[in-house]
Amino acid sequence: LLPPVAAYIHAVTDHNFTMDFSDLPALFGVLLPREGLVGYLIEAKPSNACEPIEGPPGPSNATHFIALIRRYNCNFDIKVWHAQQAGFHAAVVHNTGSDKLLNMAWNDERIREQIAIPSVFVGQTASEYLHSMFIYEKGAHVILIPEYIFPLGYYLIPFTGVVGIIIAVMCTILTQPRALLTVGWGSWWAWNSGVHFGAQGGGESKLPVFRDEYDVCAICLDEYEEGDRLRILPCAHAYHCRCVDHWLTQTKKTCPVCKQRVLQTAEDSDSDGEGRQQGEEEEEERNSERAP
Image (cartoon, rainbow, N blue to C red):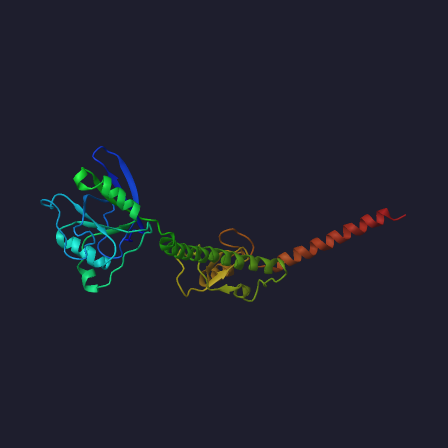
């Protein structure tokens, strides 16, 4: 739980007239409850509480009493310690001659460890209103309310770290399919650039072999495991080397999935040559017809 950085006193008279006064919590003692501490304000006697003070009137087990203490003459921890020893549940220390608010610190570590009540510091003007209108003898009560300011940096730094890790993981996941796609297009480019493999003499073994992550071999239907040798065809489909090599030697050199031709055969080369020769003859005939 983060300590409050500010607080205020909500004072209420017996006729429900209210006023609010700014204060600062002490740097020692317990924290104010988040919902606030309701109690009756009583002026300390002696007012500076530099020595043991009188206790609150009557039993204090069911009612909270808060000591109003004047600044100076001794340390803050001594004043609050005397209020606690007298039976008060909290202490309000006020400034004299100034409305400046101070963060009350301690001087004696042994006393600090024994203080178990909250305390706040107010200015002189606030103390004058409290003394004249909101003390226990006038039927009024006060509420000591803490103010918690949301520490943006306290939560933003861990949040930023988590978001950074998530982004890094997502980038890693998204770049793997891109790498696989690049391999597939690289094979396609090699095929269309004239880098063909012969149909005879174990041409299927000249297809590129990669080690990467795919899903399932479409031939044997087994999932790929680490260390498996995969062969990627020009159409970017991948298979076990042992499966696709047997397929290519027993079939028409096509991909088992998309049926795209994998290796250019001699028949394909002959048909391409015949087509080019026939086209040249037709072009010569047209040129002859146009000649005078």
